[in-house]
Length: 308
Ligand SMILES: NC(=O)c1ccc[n+]([C@@H]2O[C@H](COP(=O)([O-])OP(=O)(O)OC[C@H]3O[C@@H](n4cnc5c(N)ncnc54)[C@H](O)[C@@H]3O)[C@@H](O)[C@H]2O)c1
Picture 1 (cartoon, rainbow, N blue to C red):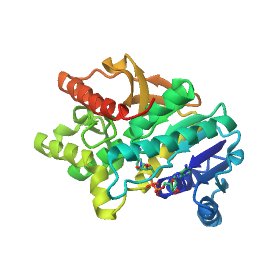
Picture 2 (cartoon, rainbow, N blue to C red; picture 1 turned 45 degrees about the vertical axis):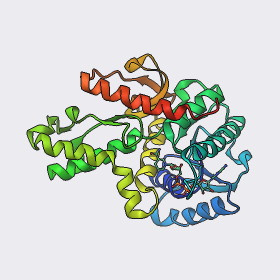
Picture 3 (spheres, rainbow, N blue to C red; picture 1 turned 30 degrees about the horizontal axis):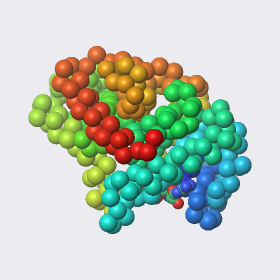
């Protein structure tokens, strides 16, 4: 099992570290454009192997895609953060250029690969990969909902005073503050609806805290988070690599499901060795359906900035 991670920055390196620590891949290739950066991260991570007890070989390369050849799974985290004075349109234009070039280089060397898109704005970048690569939809996965759901469970456990392993919850919709749809109605503590333990008002607070999960961390850290994003990606990679048939909310191309067409947005899917093996169709309430439609409008607006 060979995995490539493009972008050896905060999220990419954290993702490579978690994959190695879980010890299911034979090789992880880290790629970056910054001279020596991926090689350095790979060497540093390899020097944790004897301490952390993993056998995964991590190698780094500055842009040599030949080293990624034959990857079963490729993760795209490359991109640039927004700089002062840069408009959202300019940022999307630059990141779209990066994601387009990177996905083409990956597929050239690994035509059978499954791609996981992480770069900002993720739902739109996932859509771009669909429009530009011609890969089947089952092999293009956007990571957002797995992270948002982990943050939702963290906030639920906090509100319940419960261990996180006791709680379950799901976030669908677009991967943004306004786009996220935390399904509070379905959240449980050991199969018991969480409303049996906390008030509706407290649950609304959990929902709001979840939606600003990323922004809260950016404010504290001065940059966007990396541990939970890296862990979320590694869980998707493991589900595919180990054919786990696990369910995660991920951004996927919808063709009529959830009453949506020609858009990538977060819905529950089953992940296994073939990538997306099934889109799970939930029965939503009218309010949830409306929230999902508003969320989709936001994603479409961003997609409109793409030159495809
Ligand atoms: N989907 C999510 O849930 C989620 C969560 C966190 C971050 N993100 C996004 O993931 C991306 C990475 O975040 P980060 O914190 O790791 O950023 P970072 O700046 O630490 O790392 C990005 C890396 O990409 C590299 N890069 C840029 N262009 C490249 C190219 N053409 N080829 C190869 N490498 C290239 C940079 O040199 C840098 O090392 C950002 O776009 C961020 O917004 C998404």
